[in-house]
Length: 137
Image (cartoon, rainbow, N blue to C red; front, side):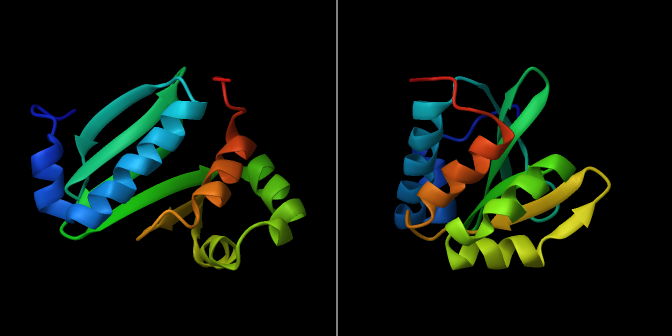
């Protein structure tokens, strides 16, 4: 856990004004569909911050921030991968490519996107629906 949660000014200074706007919109899209715990952490070696969406001990997704970059990670387990693969042609090409490039570990396929705008958000939301149905109407 982080001792101090970054505020808007710190996030803007870190990722830049445009990317912070993308971050904000992504969080708003998630908050609109999912009622979840939101946890700030250190971002490990590669990122400054991690912002996780969790419920009942299961992570839905995580956002990451570092100098001039943001990340959005979804981990698909075995059954979730089968669902994605059955429907993959209905996802944007960029999402299909990231899926194919993603490393598969014992606990699933870790797909990391680095969005620079909101174009892929509808695809992101569809990916998350494989993991968990939205719990907000």
